[in-house]
Length: 308
Ligand code: HMG
Ligand code: MG
Image 1: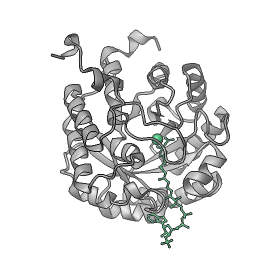
Image 2 (image 1 turned 180 degrees about the vertical axis):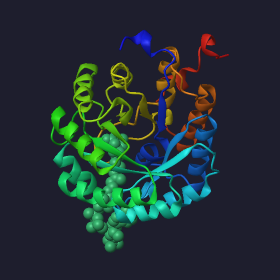
Image 3 (image 1 turned 120 degrees about the horizontal axis):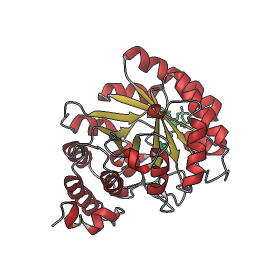
């Protein structure tokens, strides 16, 4: 698709800050501040917010209070509040907390699967079969993730075919959407084009999402490559918060504000109020006492885009 053809097309943003962001921040925030973050993100117009995760608290202590976070949010009609669930225990906790949607997370790299969820890819699919069956029976939508789609911190290169096979397996389990993760942010546009093109042989563009960490500053260019293939769902994290605890050196997701600045520049329709999101971004960075990773929030909006 030519760049000009993107104009006017809708894009769905999936906000990762409260989960992928905060899971790897050294500062521990209270559940009420986390809930406040979720509420502010919803107020800026974001309609899909990954609110927490129901994983082992020994593995990810930052997410141990996700049930309290769910209890503390003021639900906005039309907003989907989702959570990561690695197994049935996580699924049951997520349902009890009132998650609207759950997500299972697999990897395209065997070594990463072992480090992240302590089992092989095959065993993880077996666990997810149970979670997906229970979720489908309860009418709860399930999203899938495939980590290490553009490279693995342990294995190095990851064949596009392995990514596509993981996508196909998750779709077969009943995931309505699979998010393709560049966990360590090493992808570049041509590589992303190749991997996503292969994934498009297994799933439609509207069933795939892009989840790009921005370690090497390639995420926006990579997103554009995916948009031109027809993908229209983007995961991003306010202020570029976070990283992956099992991928040393990986920085946070691409910042939501930076993605919005690009999408609005392309004339795409996001429904998100960027100035309001910038306020939230600055607020959370102050609480975390960490530098803002969003270039847009650091710079502020230019006059031509509504800045002062
Ligand atoms: P395990 O140790 O193999 O699990 O961990 P287990 O079944 O043997 O259980 C061991 C203990 O954990 C038991 O407690 C269980 O009750 C407890 P004990 O008897 O020792 O007291 N346990 C749980 N507790 C609460 N909730 C649960 C749960 N499950 C077991 N759901 C497990 C296996 C999958 C649980 C563990 O490896 C884990 O929690 N991993 C999660 C790691 C994680 O959250 N990583 C970050 C998210 S993924 C990511 O960031 C990538 C993504 O953003 C995409 C991308 O960027 O690529 C999605
Ligand atoms: Mg991630």
